[in-house]
Length: 161
Image 1 (spheres, rainbow, N blue to C red):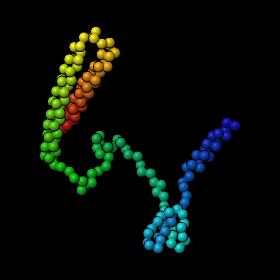
Image 2: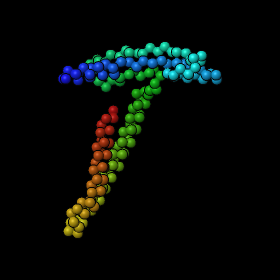
Image 3: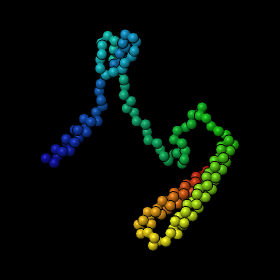
């Protein structure tokens, strides 16, 4: 009984691994339209096509021969590119934009901190702790969002060549 399960599993695996067999026909109707199908529509207007299956598998990429950071495919010769000077100009413009965004985000963070400080000045005895936390939560979330934005901008500036 124990040997039966592996044999059944092996047979099922072999049946699933067999390639699909079928016929493909190229049929042309009276108006000249071409239809490719696996169903023989009309014996006079359909011709059986010979299709060979491509069963070759490309060899795996040897990662030890690739340079780190190298593209996996080569760039086509007609692919647009920019000169080093043009790229430098673009990088400088991008750096200026990111620096301005960073300064703006730092101002927003300072403003959000001031708003939180103002809200925290309300005496704790005026409301219960849960209500106070609910009221202050949006201010704290805004501060956290600005801090994340500043971190992201600094990282992007650091990645810029």
